[in-house]
Length: 219
Ligand code: AMP
Image 1 (cartoon, rainbow, N blue to C red):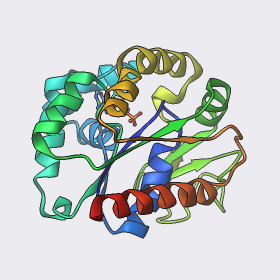
Image 2: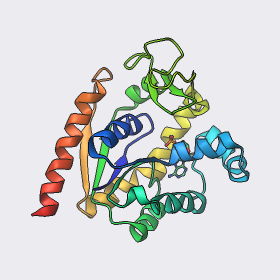
Image 3: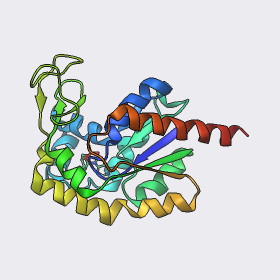
Image 4: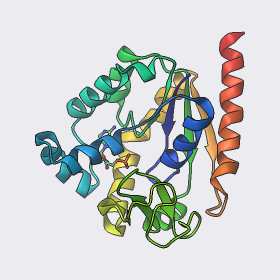
């Protein structure tokens, strides 16, 4: 299955995709993680894209499309993948259509109040990228990753003023994708109105939708 996770920043795309990857046995591909990795390694590309990421605005399409296209060529993507954070513009969606045939788009619907609370309490592992939340998904030991012992940090773009900018960018540039994928019959909505719903409950709902879609595909 080739799946796209769509939804505003902080909707849970990364958290759910990382769990789905274990259930489905296909890779979780986050363009945000790829961007952060380039920045961390201080590659020439990393230096170019840092400013966009820090300000919460989108990296130019041609850069991100190239990064993604390279990643999808890898052997581990041959049976499918879960895209998180890509596409984010109509232009990216059109480019993706030329690279791979998408089977399903999960659109996470989350109210702004939940997003802002969630992102302001989010922590990331600097070593393995695992996602925590001080309200809903606390690490066992403060500031330390349960999985790898790495140090947890707050993303620069999870500060309140940048969160607002990212939401604006989402509404303007990414939300039109809802109509784009609805028209193609690929979009399924999953709503989350309660901050305290545990990730496993949401993942279960998504797995049900994936099963239904697989049945439709094979019938
Ligand atoms: P994310 O972790 O998905 O919130 O992404 C973090 C940042 O990386 C975004 O605010 C953008 O600056 C950049 N980024 C990630 N994915 C994309 C994309 N598909 N198109 C453009 N910029 C992206």
